[in-house]
Image (cartoon, rainbow, N blue to C red; front, top):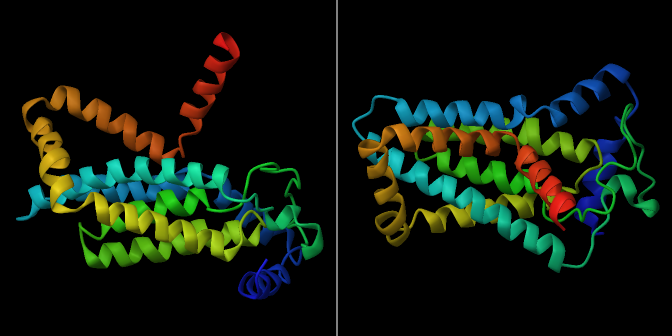
Length: 231
């Protein structure tokens, strides 16, 4: 644990258990996928269909962003498994963390804190939204910080550096996926397919964006069921 994390965590944690209502609202926001990914995916779909002179440019970059979200999440999971295990603030005994009202102290127990999956995924998505509009991108950045990143620090699920590190991973991956090589060889052909076979493209497109908004929870549950049945 470093001084940067300790200072911020201790400052934020002083407000824990001052109000049952505030703690409950923050916990609700942190756990509600509609408030988190749902809002960002609404912006994503708005950008996709918005009438704009640069619409093809925007759509191609949004396709790259979707690919980047999957790649970034895979990298985040690999790092969480390969890097030294990091206890979450809520589980760190030496931190003397005061759990907000309603928090189950066994939440995510056994899962390494770094990097934050939420930060990786949603800051990656925010980076892609900047290709739609800088103003909308700034709004999405502020929204993600206030309604996704900060609540997870307040609840003791992540340290600030977990969020910052995850955000950097998401940002870098999306920028790489929006390189000219990736766009010309992968994203543009996929986007052309949306025009030639919309009846196939858009159902798949919907399912992919739905899973991102849902943090892949249903996909993970389905994979766990398959493991139980066949392993």
